[in-house]
Amino acid sequence: MNNILDQQHQSYSRELTVDFFKSVYSYMFLALVISGGVAYYVGGNAAIFDSYFVKPEGGLSPLFYVVLFTPFVLSMIIQWAYNRLSMIMLTTLYITYAAFMGLMLSVVFLTFSMQSIAITFFVSAGAFGGMAIMGYTTKTDLTKFGSLLYMVFIGMFLAIIVNIFMKSDMLDFVISIVGVFVFTGLTAYWMQQLKTAAQDTLLSSVERQKLALVGGMTLYILFINLFLTLLRLVGSRD
Image (tube, rainbow, N blue to C red; front, side):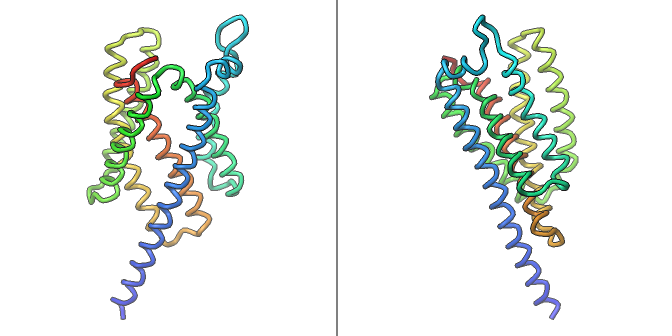
């Protein structure tokens, strides 16, 4: 009898896990489609980009800086307040976040060639997919590994700020190399964390849906950062 109950519980847990990750990747894909569409529309035509973000007398408009910081603010709201927000509000904020990310990423289409963007995207997808599978299947606890990577990420972020003033090509190269390892490693770490959440049978359906959205956003952020880091390393500029 106990064996039958255990098997039923495991079967139920597997079903929940599959449904959870379907939702996670659906949210991630939704954000990529929205961001990619907005980025291509705005950045694919210099005149459109200039009308939004460049002042008539030259220089970047205040709107550019609003767009630059809005995704960060929205992501913090989503991650910190998702338990208190309704699913409709959370989804609305998420779609808005993806659209603003698209506006921010429009610079990519003005800076790099379409061929290098496409190639780097598929390379990033391959690296991301491989690390996601590794994080999902590994039996090793990646908690300490994830904590270490976040410490390295903080150091990398500070180095980026310093390099804004130093303008060192070598430092920029080193930051990009470190970034590839950090973002691929964090992908594996977060996949393991999401797998643990997916197997929690005590979560309500609404809680699972909210966690799936936050998980999808987390994986989206990691993918975009990996893509941008690789693009800085191997992308050819227009």
